Image 1: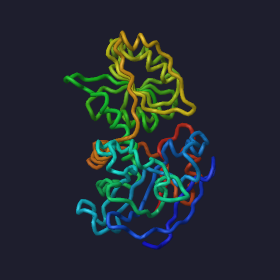
Image 2 (image 1 turned 30 degrees about the vertical axis):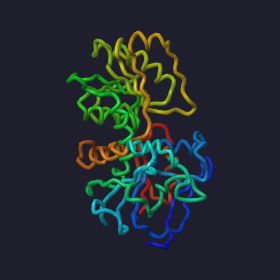
Image 3 (image 1 turned 60 degrees about the horizontal axis):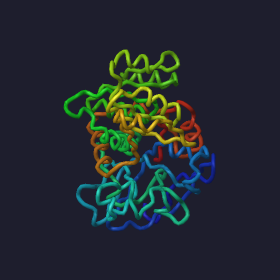
Image 4 (image 1 turned 135 degrees about the vertical axis):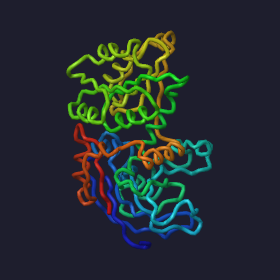
Length: 352
């Protein structure tokens, strides 16, 4: 494949994503050539397509929830990575700055997360490319039995793990009661991970399709169109939830979390970003007297990526119910239209 053309999707402007061609460079000694098989469309991707994240820049050769097979490796690539291995892609990072040394690769000081790291022309990491060359350090291995689309869940799952770790769930051998606001892809991933940590999980959701999906996956769900979730949750959890995870970027979700959280020592995890930015109204004295923890979370560490790969590879978490639909690369515009449709779960672009 070296010195051959590869195909990739690029977002040229709001609402316009097209398939283009490029030339693969020669393979360096510390790099691997990947036959990228699938890339899932993240909220970050389709919101830029909608014109909500234009600060990310055009043209954007986006996509970062991708997986594929190693088909060639450089001479210095370790024996941990071999031809035929199924892998998922990790964020770009330098590996030697202060943050990278701590494993905080999302906060790398030298490599922009979605910068022009692979091209002078395009932003992004070319997740929607059928072939691509990456550093060995930018991949994690997966169980070969996983489908390419399942493998694409490593990145979003790693970000969920990153947030869940901050909550110290079930500390001191107590079972934490956790309410998750939102049963979209990220809300349900939070629910799956929290459950795997041993927490008691309840979900609040208003979209009928998402209510149905969450119940099909075995979760207790309160449909806010039919019941007052605060009253119902307090009927079942006398003192209120220990943790509320906000997986929807809206002001109403923020308000609901503040009303839901227990009186003392509660934790609210702000998982989702919102565009435009949602408001948050709270008296700082309440935070003080109630010892309320408001926790932000973003991105992943290198260890979070490895933990996500292990959770998927061991089949401890099954993400197949979260796959909405698959499209070939040639229909990338339709794929973005579907991904941005209200109520959709993960849409996967099949690259090869």
